[in-house]
Length: 473
Image (tube, helix red, strand yellow):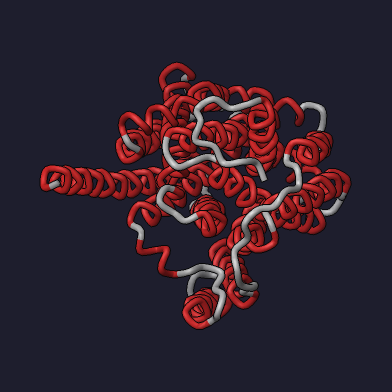
């Protein structure tokens, strides 16, 4: 692969390789959010219920999150470039199929396959970066650019979706096709096939199957619970089966020769906090976005473009500022940035608890979106840097896969909870159900702030210990 570098000056080929990787992670993130504004149009055209509609989002997120760990392990075993190229090709084909189907079940299936392909491109791309750039300022700079691309894709996806949905919702699925093809051709040129170190071992298919099935059952149980009943045999049985499969996964990881997740990696406090932080950051926002689409379009009857423009402040803020986060992380440390970002996240959601029949853009929508933009700009790059620092090169695929899994599975589970709250609290006053659903995101934001504060204390303790060691020397 590309030569590892400690030099702060990068040549044109290194920049080109980074640009290709950033373009693909932009597409991966874009696809999570771009469908958001198109959901009401999809629902109307294909005749989907609200609970079925959320599977258009969850299908992608679960395929993505359920197989990310296997994707990261595969990249470590077979070679990051090879895995990256094959998965990107599948992503392009699945995108095309998603734009052509005329059945809700087929659309969800195409989204699931597309998510699976992203589960292999994302950890491969991230591990290419973390094994190419030396830990420290060079890697922080590269990761800040990389994660800024992902955060920008996720934030701007709604804006792009609004523009495309005005032409027709199918364009939101077809647009990534030519971009993915161009990225594939560029990857062949700028990610040349060279010798790269590969991890030893084999595949843990038992782990991959059990963790994916567990997450699918968990989301299915929560989504269908309002209709089936929380005390019904179907709901309780699904939850118990999900827990049993998770237990099998943990046992398997302890016993198989080459586990999907080496459980010892979870002894790292910063890595665990980063994973919990991304569960909350991504999960709470996916749930909030789903509710916001229903509020803006179905209740206020805003057009797709008007809805997209409401999210524009957050998207622009992330796109403009995220690339600077590497320098800020070098100067202030990731723990402080995550604390500030977590506070902004909870505050942004809290603004939307005041939703009414005639929202004020200047006192409600814009301030709330700016706070959410600040949260993503500060937290997303910082969490990625924190999760991969101190991890050996042969486990970078695992670390990056674990982090992305946390975000995607968090998104699927929280979306299922928010959808359940939205449908179960529906009544004569839809505003009350919107507020109840947004409250879930507020609570998660506050929980994330609490976790971030423990990380800040841990960082101070570690710094004090290092100072004592230096004084002793």
